[in-house]
Length: 220
Ligand code: SAH
Image 1 (cartoon, helix red, strand yellow):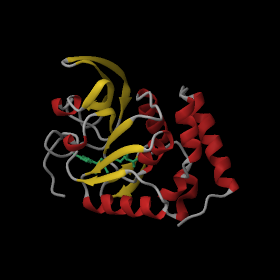
Image 2 (cartoon, helix red, strand yellow):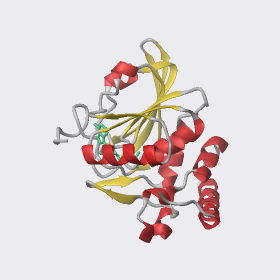
Image 3 (tube, protein in one colour):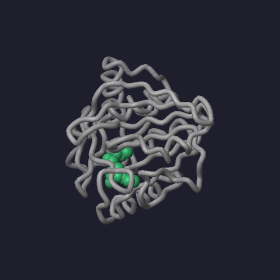
Image 4 (cartoon, helix red, strand yellow):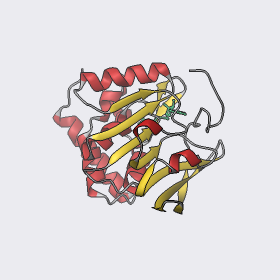
C-alpha cells in the first residue's frame, strides 16, 4: 500500500491544468483525475513518470493509458453518478478508478489473467468495489447488460455489433477503431432499438483489442 502525500496532490493539480489546456472541460472528469493517485499504479522509482501525460508499460505487453486519453474517453462518455458503466480492458485499473470517482456502478473485464489478478488485488488493497471479470470482453459482458456507458480501452478492428446491443436507449459506446498503428476515437449513441448515431474524433494509439471480435485469439 502506498501513501498519497501533499507533493503528489500538487503533481496531480499540475497534470489537471495540463489536461485543461489540452481541451478537457468536463469538471467531473477533471475532479476524478485530480482525486486518483496515479502513482499507486507505478513502482516507487517511477514517481515522475506517474504524473507526466504519457502512457507507461504495466507488463504483459500492455500499458496504462495516457492521462489525456483517459480524460478524453471519459469526457466523451458524458458520465453521470447514476450510470452503469462497462469498461473493456481493466489493465492497471487506473481508468476504472477514474470511473469509480463518478459512479459506483462499474463493471470491468480483463483478458490477461496476470493483469486481472493484479488489478483485483489493487482494488482490494485500496477498498474499491468495481465488479471485476476475467475473460474476453470484445463482445461485451452480456450477462450484466444493459449498460448506460461502455468504454473500450484497446484498439478494435471495427465496432462489434454485440457491444452496441448491450447499450440502454440513449446509451453511449466510446471505442477506438482502426489499424494497428492508429485508431480513430468513435462515439456511438443508441437512439432507438435499431437506431445509432456515430461521431468521429481524433486519432489515438492503443494496444490491440484481442479476442473474438478483436485482432486475434491469443491465449490467456
Ligand atoms: N484501461 C487500462 C488500459 C489498459 S491497456 C488502464 O487504465 O490501465 C488495454 C487493456 O485491454 C490491456 O490490459 C489488455 O490486456 C486488455 N484487453 C485486450 N483485449 C481484451 C479483451 N478482448 N477483453 C478484455 N480485455 C482486453
